[in-house]
Image (cartoon, rainbow over the protein chains, first blue to last red):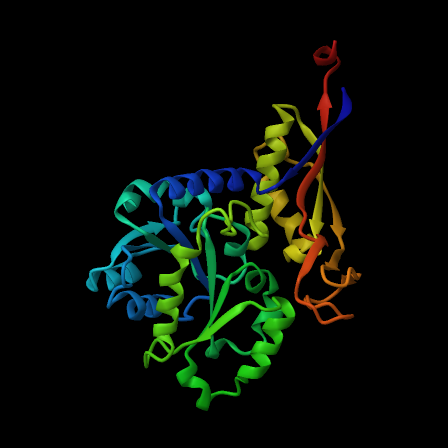
Length: 235
Length: 117
């Protein structure tokens, strides 16, 4: 018996990125723009989607792929508003994956029905770490942070804040009741991701929700050969 | 739990390249920007590699520094904390030269004399 060194030099997430590229090719063929929506648990992603998608996005057929460790509470809420929603649970194998990966999304594409859509929003599992590592073939990433989480979060979870195209600061109706300093948050955000687009919203009162809807409505037009494309993560 | 996902990906990659041979060492390069905690990765590696050809293998980890380059002024520097603006000109167009690696660099496998004949 003897030792043999085998040169590998391969990204550990190569397998995921390969499937993400296949997803991306399917999205391109169907002409669907895909957003990966990420945040910590309880930041208000689903409530924001209710507010944004409830009245519809002008000119776009929108679908949601709802990722959760277990259950369909979020999907049910969106279905009540007649949003085209597909549930994807991650509680197989190891007892609940903490993120969606390209293969999980791929397994749900038949149920999603890409041909009936222009925009697909993938609502990831609530988690500020793992989802940032796993591309699913998306065009853009939106990261939702909330006032209740504190203004230092960009510094604590830089990968998540760095690999997104839009940061939404939600729950701004809570500002009067907390020590959250919006300027400090934006200062930290600028250090981690200089120049990234950002919006402030309150899904509860509806403030800023129209701006988020406008951002989503403009996204398919920005797509195409110049679109950034996330077959591979992070950029 | 981040390290659980990453260690699973590392073991899967190593198993594929081992092609059935027992793995003695897995060498990985981890960029600072990937937020992987080496001790935690080693812990999960031992867990995830059970009942694979990687069981009992040593995980060697090389941490790669985060180096940035400013596009407008061409300044290059290394960061210890997540601060991505150019310290010289304040520019935001910054390229990451290194620090995003999450790479299985090589593995060491055991080969019997009969196999190499």
